Length: 67
Image (tube, rainbow, N blue to C red; front, side, top):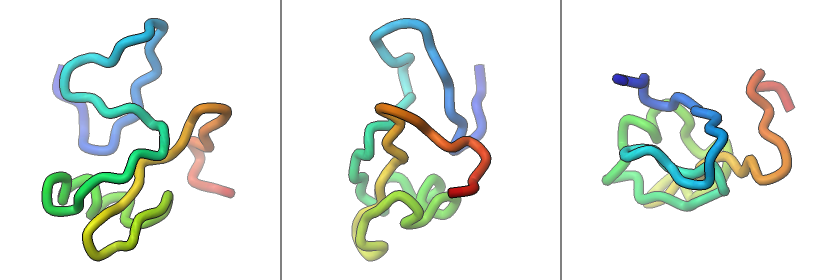
């Protein structure tokens, strides 16, 4: 499977497939995940200089892009 950068994968198990990151609001370094940062920026947090955050989908995740 060759997913697109920024894809969200819903899985029915408690582990992540290799190469996937959990949507739990994790702060990531921009220099390590630059293509993903270029897509989502600081929409979910981070300082935009060194870090950005993934969405936090613990309770809900708006897949439409509307708040």
